[in-house]
Every structure is written in C-alpha cells, then in structure tokens.
Length: 112
Length: 114
Image (cartoon, rainbow over all chains, first blue to last red; front, top):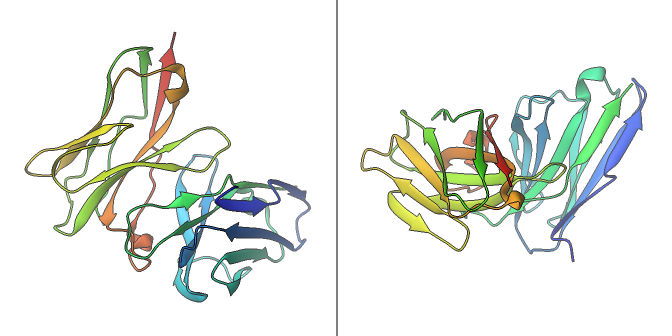
C-alpha cells in the first residue's frame, strides 16, 4: 500500500517530445507538490496544489503544466522536452499546516 | 529566506553516535527546523522537527540552542542502513502557503562503515 505513488519510475525520451508523469496519494492529504531534483541533488519545489487549486508555481517554464483531477491526484505534463529537463521528479503530499511531507519514489526523466 | 549550511559529507562507523550540525543564522521567529533523510533512488523521508530545546523520537534527537541559529541532528548507534543524505530545512510549519519557502539544500551525505 504505497502512500504516494508515481508512474513511470523511469522515462527516456527525445528532445521535443511531450510526456506526463502521474502521481496519486492515498493518505487523504489535501495538498500535493511536485519537486525537481537535479544532478547536484538540490531538491526544489515546482508546484503545489491544495484541494485541486494551484497554490504555488515557482518560476517554472510554462512547458510544465500540472493537472489535479481530484485532491488525490496531481499529474505533471511536460511539453517540448529539453535536455535541461533531465532530472528526478518527486511528487509529495502533506496535510495543510503540518510539518511533514510524504514523498513518492521519484520519476527519473532522461531527455536525449 | 533562512539559508542553511551543513557539512557536505560525514563518515562514521556502526554503533557510533552521529551528530550532524546545521547552521541557520537568519532563522525567523516563526520558523521550524525540520530534518529529512533520503536514500538513493527514493524520495526524502521526514525524520524530526523542532522549534527549540530538544526533541526526541524513535529515530533521532534534535538539539536546538536558545538562539536557534543552529541545530544538531543526533543519530544514536548508527547502522549501515543509516547511510543516506540528510537535509536540514528551516521554514514555517509546512502549510501549503509556506512550502515555497522550504528549500532543500545539497544535504549531508552520511556514510556508515562496518
């Protein structure tokens, strides 16, 4: 019973393609996030959704579009992929105003 | 934003106590101190959070001096499985509105040897 699950775990694609990463949490949390971890291991927030509403959009190119069909899901769609998009993308969830983020196992995206 | 500074790496041996110190000179009054652990190919995992003095749970202890400009994560009797990257974060309690203020730095890579 994985609390925060992401698919796919690995994704290899060509520049210019469009791809999506899906995330689901079964913890009943009201807030979900997407983080990007680069090759230097810095983990930076990209988006945050609370009850399906976009709360945070941290200077991410508009090629990245999050979609939250319900509060248990937050998907990430990326258009026109670039080499610099190669990274590990982590989905996370939390209950509002708690100090604990629950992360998925990450999705490693490689753009060739 | 309260920036954190922690050692890039540390080595220790099984059975030892490991203390990882984090500096956060610009910590704000409303900021909490939170530590996460990350194993290779996994997402970070919450370890402990505190505001002042000492907090202890089944995994670790967190020591915070009165001025709160630093904090120390203490791992008692480490084992090989404690080899991971440890992140020190400073920010308001993670409500959705404050998540953008929480920055994961490069962390401390802890290596435990037999």
